[in-house]
Length: 168
Image (cartoon, rainbow, N blue to C red; front, side, top):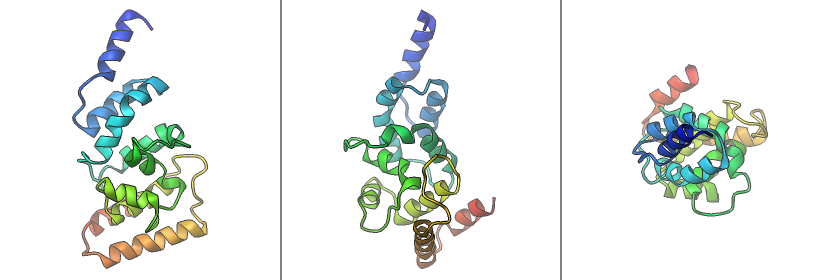
């Protein structure tokens, strides 16, 4: 990398990001390399967890993009420093059922059971990564039933948004 490129790279990497949109823009400009991942994973975890300002219902493409770009980085990741990010990126690969560690960690990060199951099903049907759960498998069927039950038992909140996502 030339000096000018290196300087721009460093500026982007050290930019004081305040929103997920800003971070995604910066990440789209930077190469997908380990140094970038190590630098941003903590901020990603915060912006998707305790400091989350985006809705899973209206910002689904951000979650898809993150799974595509970073799911291999968290495969086998055992540290607990980025639990929200880790369990979000694992959603299309496993069932975050009631009582599971994934469900508990995501609820601790501020997600509702409805959001977790909606995002699980949405990501599963986006074919965004290799080795995901099978859409026509028993696990996916159980996830779909739970997702429907969660939304039908609820107060009807977000049903219009969820319906629009599945129609479009």
